Length: 83
Image (cartoon, rainbow, N blue to C red; front, side, top):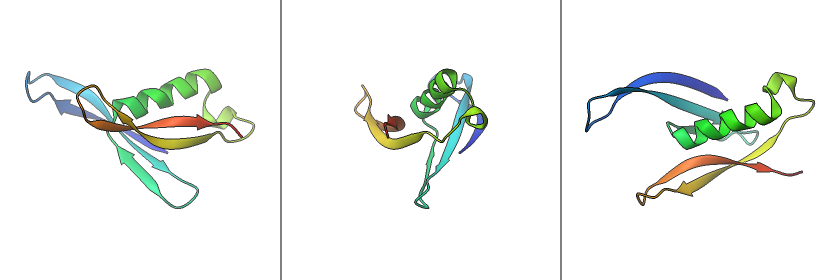
């Protein structure tokens, strides 16, 4: 995975906020790119619970899912898969 922080301007307020572009590389050769805060926050929660990947005894398996948002749009997120 790769996470890049960037500055983005809110179109309505003009406020500059921090965003995160996240790229997940799958074992199957697929990659997923998103600027979704939901996916980024899910990664942070996984790291808070399990520590950083360099600390894991074995890799965690996650599924990339499409999550519905309140505004009718959708966003990518992650779901832990039990093995």
